[in-house]
Length: 508
Image 1 (tube, rainbow, N blue to C red):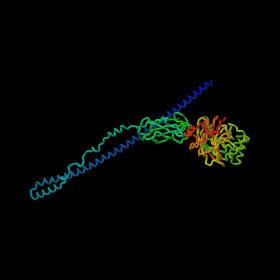
Image 2 (cartoon, one colour):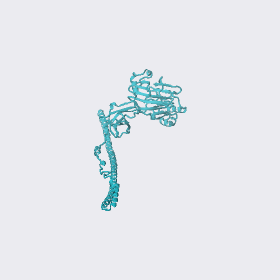
Image 3 (cartoon, rainbow, N blue to C red):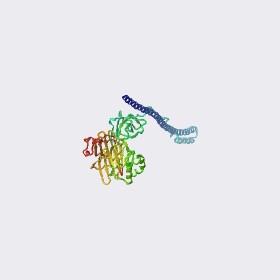
Image 4 (tube, one colour):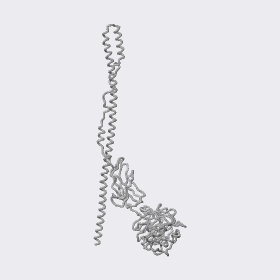
């Protein structure tokens, strides 16, 4: 019966996953169909605009050429009209002279004849008909203004759609995810020397496989990439995966997208658990700050929760009346035994806040930065069963390094109420590496990756990131991969550092 139920549950899970996959593909098809309709309409509109532009240019050229012909016609006509007028005048004068000469032949008197002959000779000498050119100044040919658009017609007949670059191919083997950076590499299926640049698009997602159409995140765009590789650095890995796609562009048009590639970008993401933090801590997501007045404003709420005024509430009232308590003062003997696993809030002098995500396996890394004037703080991990009065490093269920800048400066590793002084400079940022399966908790200078201290133990329960702060504040950086430098250092370590041996043990 149980085995059949398990088999049926697996079938149900498989069917549900397949249905989800098909539904996503249906969404892709619907979006593609909508895109075809919208893009076709846009392309048709652009085509009309392009042809209208061609028509406009042809009309302008035609009008210009018509004007040239008309101007040439007017020029030649004017020249010929002028020449024609001159010839008509010359002909008229010449005919008059001819008639006068003919009449002169009939003159009988020698003197009158001689006089007439001299006049005719003088007039002939001055006659315009003898100085007139009898060649047309212009021809009637207009062949120099004829056109032959055969080549242009051939060009127009070869009009076609732009050559679109082929879709690039992303090579998952050449892609690299490391140190909160992603390097994406691609290649063209065939050489194309007309490609001007590439466009890379990416988005974060929590879904494996094909990108979801209805994914809650939008594509981010990186334009004008000249090479076939690009590195995105300084990322926060706050999703399990990232989708990538790329397209090639020539100087006119962008090509098709490559097939999308999904790369795993899994990292530990957590916030601070405000619901169980000490009342004197003001917690916001990944920041915590000491607030000495925080407890006074919450006392009424505590009374309602604790009912009849428990001993730890009375202790808290005493502390708030006496001002800011020292982190070194303890009252372990007078406090009631902690109720494991039923904590409402840390109280007393346990100015603690835990992360809201438990670590149950794997290797994880996060960083912590303290305010410059922070007087005291601790960074480490603890079991969920850490008591509400327990301070980090003072029980066998918590491990930490502690920085004290109050009265005297100390830097130490703490576990099970044992202290190991660290002879190193307190870094600006502390990197925390937790290898749950390997039973190792290491602290690093986040900038130089210098190892500060390592605990070697065996975690028997899930652990939570833990923080203590007094008179100051801390800010966290999560969603980080284990840095390559830290991985290299971990490989070089031979299981356990000698400086940590005094605090290493196996907790039960």
